[in-house]
Length: 302
Image (cartoon, rainbow, N blue to C red; front, side):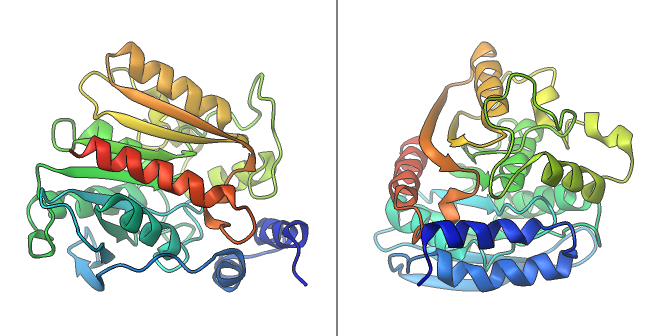
């Protein structure tokens, strides 16, 4: 019988030092059916592509039952340290967000390292958002005036980057335990440095794999926490996990947004690790957390 402890240990093995990127990706795909409950149903799911900087960008769209008439839509970027994860591994999370919020969700399959180092993921994320903002998903009910960006972990990083670089073109940002900087791997005054899915070693591997040069760490497209000016950035909801090495930087980003007059709400879920939203079968709190995030999304796109 698979216990929560055994499942978390298996999840942690994704990032074992001996694993290659393809091996980690396959391990994650195998684990998702074990870690996830079946999400609530939606009216329609469709796979399509958008034009990208060098190749078409895959996108999956979820249209919930009773989708909002105002054309509200979320452009979502999956987590996985810019190395693993894809539309399929984060499909249950996206479907739950759509079902609980009534907001259409488009999940973007951006290019990943090491095959495609920075800034490939950022360029794909911006291209996908721009295409949707220009009406590429209009037939699916997405309204350019009612768009949000969102993502978990590395995907939250991409969402924050888009919110900074496309001021005035989106209405809301949904940041789920976002990775907001790669300058400091050893977090100062961080109460939780090691977790089953994220640790100092994993963060070091992400930095080494994702970046072309050590100088890239201070590029605000890598570390959006370092941006000089956040005035005019879209309102944000930041979801945090207590047992997460990223806990303090999420709090710091919330404080910086507020200092620039950006409406921001931050909620911390206790006794759960980074990545817990993909563990609905293992950690029941994940379902409640996703519903709370979905309600914030719906409210932010009214």
